[in-house]
Amino acid sequence: MKKLLFLMCFATMGVTALAARKNDAQNPVVGSWKFSRQSNQNEFRKVMANDASKDYQSEYFIFEGDNKFRHEFVNEKGVIVKVLKGKWKTTGDKIKIDYSDIDYNLTISYFFLDNDLVLGQNFNHVIFSKDNTENQNYALK
Image: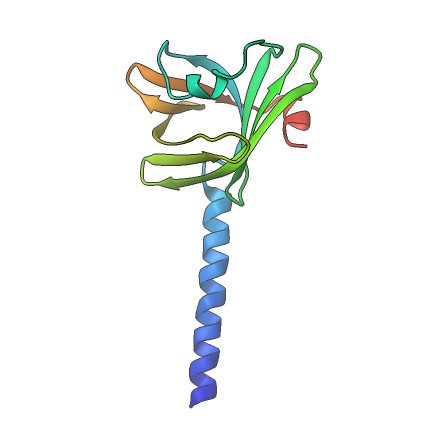
């Protein structure tokens, strides 16, 4: 009887872990997102406050299925000039972003507007477009 109970618990844990992994893979946030536009006031201005020189042309958020992310800055030649890393987690309509390279974290609303990911709301937002171009090749390295 104990063996049967143990096997049932083990099987339940395996199915639960498999379902969680499947849900992560299906999370619509997962992928490479290219910066598109922003409101004058937004939560991400604090991330760039330390960046006196803007030596990049494009900016990407790469949300990975294992709840890690990279915030990459790419110059006009397609070279990554700066990378910030951290962890992310969605809960309902909020996304929690914890940077590990800098002392900054935030919990912010998110939603999708057509193929765009909007972080924030109303007049306090940043918009990223799904990156399905060749840029994704270096953004996902």
